[in-house]
Image (cartoon, rainbow, N blue to C red; front, side):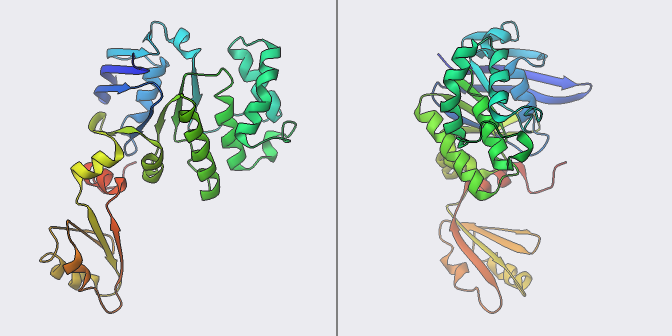
Length: 300
């Protein structure tokens, strides 16, 4: 049985179709990523899957329960990490965990028994009496993640779990999320960090304008949609160099003052980089796939 199965999901607001016929399936124990530019429909899709808003069409099954009809029953076995921390500033670290556990009807003694493990998971041992306003951004995010585990969920939804964090905090949360999948929990996350998706996700779907436009493992998507080698060139004289690059690489793009060359073998183009030009020669990444499929224009 799938942890999450979505078929033909649609949602419109007025004349604007936000989710247009989405199909998804997430296996138990899998980390599944949902990627897309701003306005692609990712957050709306998560809300639909949780039964927080009603779909216009389609079928959703969450942990074997039909949603939205039995969303409340399904959510008892689900954890949610929202895009923005919504911890209660009037309560301490421990009190935030206790109050949240009560929403699930967990007995006080059971909540108390789980708190040491949750504090250890969040790296907040010894900070249980600390007020929320005294915590760093990384600490708050780890506490929000730990809070989502109060009910020992089978599946955890996370909406951009590391946005706004410094690299150290981000890497620590990545380690915690990998630990959850090793314990057999299912994760569904949205993110704008392509490196995060590459590191954490077993499979992912890329959404754009309310539709899934690609799906598969990060490695499979890179192999299917992008040339394996990339050369980035910038600096004085990049425009004249770009004219020559068109004859040396199969695909050349300019973004701002940077030229991107893609190909199976870009050594011929690399050998011509000289003078004040700077360059980076690297393997293709998930970000290259994302930009190729969704475009490089800014989204509001």
